[in-house]
Length: 261
Image 1: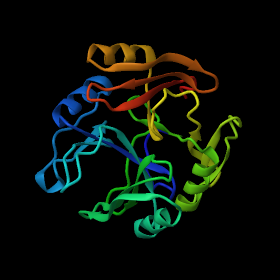
Image 2 (image 1 turned 180 degrees about the horizontal axis):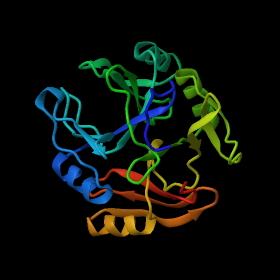
Image 3 (image 1 turned 90 degrees about the vertical axis):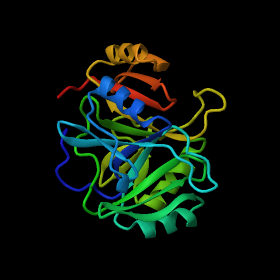
Image 4 (image 1 turned 135 degrees about the vertical axis):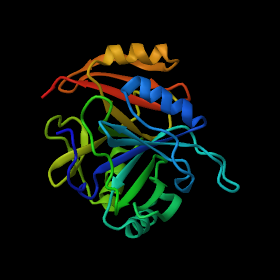
């Protein structure tokens, strides 16, 4: 399935966005890489850009700005989870050892949101939809396909997100050696340890984009001054993957699935 026609089940990743120092440069980069369309948004939305594929929203992009005495946020992709009640979810985050970074607030009539960190420091967002449900295209070239948590405590992270989002953490049916997050029996994300990551890498949610050809996208990224952190490799039962970084420092993965149906 590529187009999302109905609302996201609570606990499912529904949106991703990126804050960058140079918003126009970010828009230009992802337009060249994935074919996104987008422009700096109106002032009443803080300039927020909703990037689209085929006229449908796939991701957000915004200029990173300092807020009060807080420095500008780091350049990183944020994964947002759909929930029925953002305020109740925020309370659950606090009750289960998480930290609220940006408290729940209304985003016009689009929905309610907050940003938090889990007990290990991985940052994520929560979205309570109203007029806007989230990404309307997924699982196809240039769109979100997977959200992977890297955590120093797989079991602890599983317990946290289960308590906060209502997901079920356990072995993935298709790859039981990995821990997945399930919503009504459907795997919507995963969590793995950090043993194989470079020393000093913080816990984080890694956004994965579907691509038709991982090698050609990596070549295009390098030509546009991006960096390759993990060169393309074949992963059993998944496809050909790479981990890369855009010119402003945001890390993400690309996946060319072996299942093109």
